[in-house]
Length: 473
Image (tube, rainbow, N blue to C red):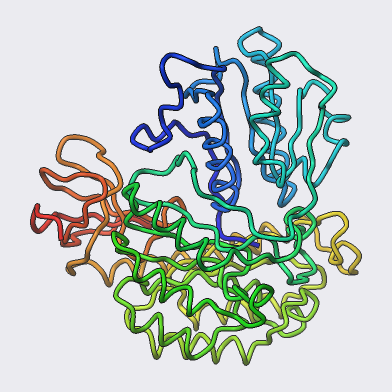
């Protein structure tokens, strides 16, 4: 289970090298795009946008009036599936009103449900699975050409990594996500990702570096590495974990300032990896490591392949050896069989560990996962109450951490302007779209600048500060 999702629709990044696909007045058609789900899904969305741009399709910001609409969906848990279906139906309302010619549904939801999605929502024009993304232009051709026989496009999980270069990015110029692998070999009993994304497939080091170089040349300064299981990187392709080698290569990419590690599984966290992070000038001391629970019985039922003692030892080691470390984690509460005592044990651990950033998910019963067959499923109100209770505890921890930053000077990466003299940015301790932000008061700033900021106030999860100087560091 990943950290909190990115959900929303996006406008084109007009400074991207692929932002103007229509050359010499030629345009095959216009389309709007809605992307839902996690940063890994966002990378797939950007790759589809790049494919369409290179084929002569023009992206517009409004679905109303576009030739067609693409919805790249999330199928992870029931709430995300419900949201995806709601967006699909909203786009189909536009089609019925004559405001767009068709709706293409892509990504994890059709990959998981298959043709059953068409049975449930038959007005969808075409569905495209996760691994059909590189043929999205052909599907668009079918739609605008009136060919309805190609109703769905699925491809089996690939045997080698897909190339994510030539993306039309929807993130701002200065940060991007880079997917270093696809799929997952873990067998967590609650998780449906392997059913949608397949087995773990490592993207070769040279392919990752080529993509990082492309992104850096396009203005990226913060590179967020994502995968289903980042610490597994390389094991399937090279016969051993090679995340350290990858990170050392990425450190050499000119133009990158921050390298952020996300979705780190607690297994395969070697001393060499810890030393590499601790000694790096570019790998920031922010680690996103979903733990899911701390009680040994719960961890076994989840099939996490790690126990409480190992988890505590790892957290302690990371704290001891990486200066100024900020840790983000996620937990699942209300898992089948979770007792009041086991939940109290989790609360106690959260209090002791003092994670600066944390998300909590109430257990979602996912059909066809092993956990669905377990005994002891809890009422929804119990799961939600436990989520709220744990998040209330975490809120206090996060607020106290924010208070420790007041009065200090930190480097802030400016994301956007809010109003005259007011900017929104982030310190290293905040991942984009997931954590908090820093509101910066200053003049002559620009998105993508690193600015020293004196923190003067905490505002809930966010910070407020004043730029110390206007020159980019």
